[in-house]
View (spheres, rainbow, N blue to C red):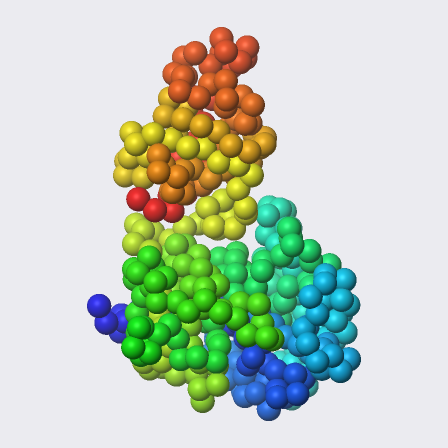
Length: 374
């Protein structure tokens, strides 16, 4: 399938998220690549003149800190990484500001952790702040808050941060800029369009650079997260001249990830439930319940539940697994794990007697359920 229809949609995007990788932003000495930042600023300025809002996710704080401190290797322990990031953040932002402000663009910095997206209130506050920055004429520059992040609250890479941010903002396009032309096939040729994510995952070389933490694995996962919401993602070579402008002109650059075939795009609320916050537990269901949820648009009932895993409370998001253990959906549970253990496999008419109180008929109502794969 040619990617032309999807490339034509790129030109219609009015809010995009652009992720700049560490290798793009770092010069040979590890410091911010100032000439490259000026090139990015020039392209962003032209897009803004066309009415396009651009939110940037910028890696490179640790690399900038390493160079400033004269460290030859990337630190491995958490405390040193946090300290180096604290040194590098102002170096990186100063370079970005000096590139953008001569073109009449103010920049603003936001530092986020994974828990900012897990918490619904902080998630909404982040979205509102970025939207207001755009109304004020600023370019938001977002990075992971490496100065406080530890393993359990890390994104792991800024590719996923960019994807979650794209979904939070309901941006129409995610552009992941890297130092390769896109996803490559077994012969080393660029893949123009990805619509089969399972097949595309078999093409990925699993590796990272000394500067960054990501790789094509994380970019593929990030693109899939955006596509699941019904939007388009692109992986492209950030060193290609005018790459952002070429994408908006519909030129054949990068790899386009087609949106999932949904009747409509996911709402902001369902993007948070299904694609953003991490599940607090898991529910495994039988084949009949899986078919009802995935193909008939039904709510999840207790009668189809086989097992319950995790310690979650009423109202938390849980993963829904099929009989083979594949995650097929996520949703807000009307019951905590302890109560679900008591009512799993039972009919709703039995709930009041078992629990000693009036209860919901559905474990997860279809309005609070997001199907991830059929």
